[in-house]
Amino acid sequence: MVDVMLQAKEFGHNIKELNVGGGLGIKYTQEDDPPSIDAWIKTVSLSITEACKKNKLDLPLLMCEPGRSIVSTAGVTIYKVGAFKEIPGIRTYLSVDGGMSDNPRPITYQSNYSACLVNKPLNINSEKKYTVAGKHCESGDVLFKELELGNCQTGDLICVFGTGAYNNSMSSNYNRIPRPAALLVCNGEAEIIQKRESPHDLLKYDVLPDRFIKQS
Image (cartoon, rainbow, N blue to C red; front, top):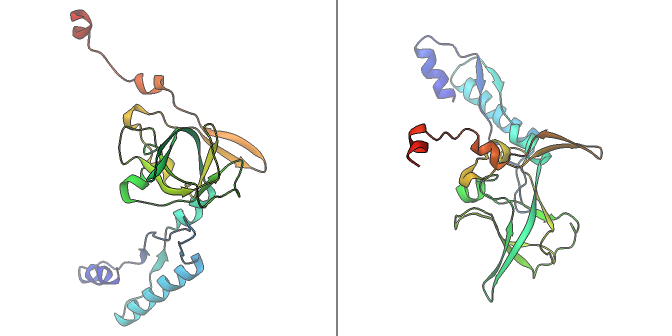
C-alpha cells in the first residue's frame, strides 16, 4: 500500500489518509488463534511507519476496519433440529430448519463454527458426532461435519456462535426460503429488530402477465 502511495506521489497526489481495511479474524473454533486488536494494530502501524520512513513519505492518518472482530462474537444463530438419518458405520445426519440461505460461508469457502445444544450446553459427547445438514436441495448444504453434541432429538435447539458479522448480511432467499427473524438481546430482554419473512413476502412481487391468464 505504501508502494501505491509512492506511485500516486509521482502523479502529484499526496495521500494523507491510508485505510488498510479489515481482515482481523475471531475465534470461530477452539483451534483458531487470532491476534488481539492491540497486537494487530501494533503490527500494522509499525509496518506502515517503517515503510514510510524507508521511502521518505510523511506518515498518513492510518485507519482500519475491524468490524468482524467486534460484531461476530456479539451474534449467534439458533436452529431447530428436525429429522435424523443414520448411515451405519459412516455418519449420522441431523437436519435443521436453516442452512446455506442464512449462512452461505460453510458451502462457499468451508468456514467452521462452534455450536452447542441450547438446553444442554455442557453436555458434549465426543462419541456422538453429527453432520448438520440444511433444508435446501443441495448436497453441499452442510453447516457442520462431525459436530460433537450431546444426545439430542427432534425439536432441540442448536446455538451456533460467532455469526454476528456475515450471516444476516450474506443471507438470501435461495430456493424461495424466507429469511429468519433477528432479535436484539440485552440483560434478559429480547426485542425484534428484523421480522421473519413469510412465503407471501417472497411472492408479492411476482407478476403473471394478462395474456397468460387469458390463455389459461
